[in-house]
Length: 135
Image (cartoon, rainbow, N blue to C red; front, side, top):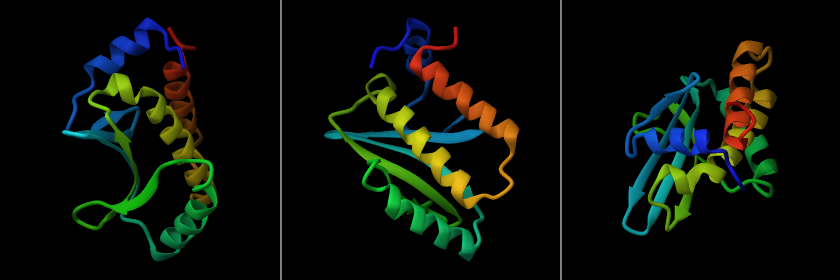
């Protein structure tokens, strides 16, 4: 996918190895010698019902998306992550990031009733920026 130069410049500024807050969403890219893990915190301090809903939706969306569920090191946050073979930077992970954000939106919409419209607008803005629609 072709991104605009501003988006590419923005991706170059993101730190590798530590979570970054992007419009209220925590995302990380951890690199290894043979690839990288791209992840996003889906829910912090989730309930058992939210976990079950997420798992049901996650299996349904698994065919369409490449990311899967995991727990944070402390076990309190549900994460969505995927392995990107050969990826070493945010520039190379840009398309996968957009797909991951789309998957996150679909999951959150289905498991978080009464979702905050402001958060949805922020996430839409981020996706448009990745697609080159915001200058």
